[in-house]
Length: 365
Length: 186
Image (cartoon, rainbow over all chains, first blue to last red; front, side, top):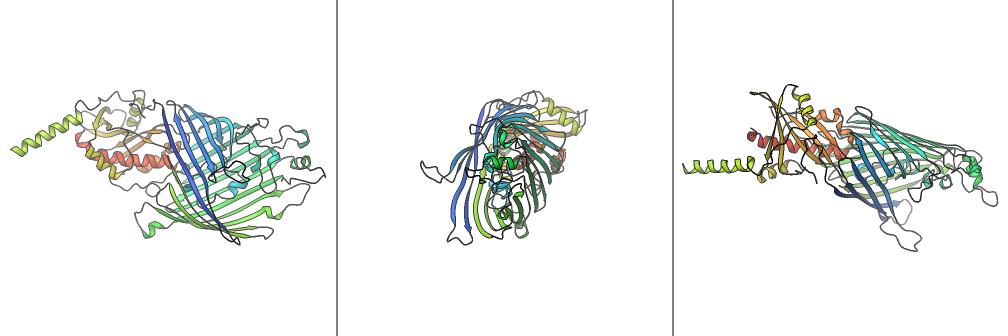
C-alpha cells in the first residue's frame, strides 16, 4: 500500500504491492438455421499486477478460453498469456515496456474488456483484419507529445506468413510470444490525439517482413495502417475503425506453399481491408433521469475483405463481407453488461446468414 | 450548565482526536503541490499544510456520497493565502486506478468550489490522458453535492475510463470531506 506522502513531491508508492483483477464474458450464439444455439463462457481473464517501486511495475493478463482444456480432446479451450510486461516509467509520462505487449493497432485490441464495447462478440473487423487479441513479445517506448497527444512505439517479434490465409487474413500468422522466432522483427506504433474528453482520434501501424528470409517467398513485407475515431456527447456515442493491409510477395508465398501436385494451398491476398462504423445512444436517462445505469441501443455496419486484391488466382467472393449488427447493452454498473444483439452476416457470394447473440460481461480491478 | 460542560468536554475530546497525538504532523509542502497551488492561487500565497483526521462518522457520511475509499484517515490540506485572507485550499490524495495509485491535488476556493484539479503522479501504464487540461477543467466550479456522474456530468476519456472514473470519485469524495471538515482547519 501507500507509504506517507514524501517531501520529494507526493511521489508515494514506495512499498511493493500486488493487485489482481479480471474480466470475463459468457456468450449465447444462435445461428439462423441451426437447431439450437450454444452457450459458451468464452473467456475468463485474470489480471495480476505488481508494483516494485515508484517507477517500475509488472502487468499481466492470463486467459482461459472456453472454460477448459482436456488432454486428447480435438476441440477445447486454451490458456494463454495475453499480456506480461515490465513497465518502467523512467521520466514523468515516458516509459519503457518490455515483455508480451498488446499490439497498439485499432482500439479493441488494447481495450477489450466486454463492458467497454457494444455487441456480444467483438466486431469482426477486430478479429479478421486486426487479429485481436494481438500480442507479441517485444519492447518499446510510450509517452506524450505535449498536451493531448500520446504515442506508443514497439519493436516486436513479427508475423509468420505461412499462417496467413485467404479467409482469415493475417490472424494465423501471430506468434503470441510462444517460442517466438525473432527472424521477422517488426515495428508497431500508435499516436492518439485527445482533442477533448469527448473526442479521441488515433492512427496506428504494423510493418515488418513475414517470411523469415525464405528466398522462395520473398520478403513478404506487411504494412498495416489503421485509424480509429471515438466521439461521445451526452448519451450519444460514435465509433469508427478502419484498417488496410498491404502484403508484398503474396504470390511468391502462395507459390512456395503449393502442394505436391502444384495446387495452391493458400490464397493469400496482396491487399486486405476492413472498417466499421457504430452509433449508440443511451436511452435510459430519458425514462429514468438521474440513473447511474445505462441502456444503449446501437447499430454497427462492418465491411471487410481479406482478398481485396490478389495475384495469380480468382478471389473467393465469400471473403468480401458486410455485416450489420443491431442490439442493446444494459450496464447496471460501468463494469458489468448484459448484451443482446442480432447480426445480418452477408457476403458477395450472397451466402448470407443471421445470428442471434446474448451475453454477459464484466471486469473488475 | 451541565449540558454546557458536556458540550465543552465533547469539543475538547474532538480536538484531541483531530489535532492531538493521533494526528500525523504535516511534513513540508511537496514541491509539485506548491507549484500547482501557486499556479491556481497566485505566486505570492503562503502555503501552510494542515492534517485533519477524519472521524468514523465523517467517513460514513462521505462514504454515502462517493465510492472512492480513503487510503488512510488523514486529510492532507494546504491552506493558501496571506496573514489575514484565505485564497483557497489544496487537498492531496491518492485514488486507485486499474492497478496503481494516482496522486492528485484538488484546489478549492473559499466558496467551496473547485478551482483546479492536478494529476501530480500518474503511474498506470494506460490512461495518462486524464492529465490533459480538457479533462481536468470539467471539475472547475463544482461544489460538494453537485452531480458528478462519470459519463454523464463528467465526460470520461475513451481508453482511460477507469482512471477518469477514479479521479471523478476522488474529487467528489474530497469535496464532501472538505465541506464536513473545513470548520476544523486552522
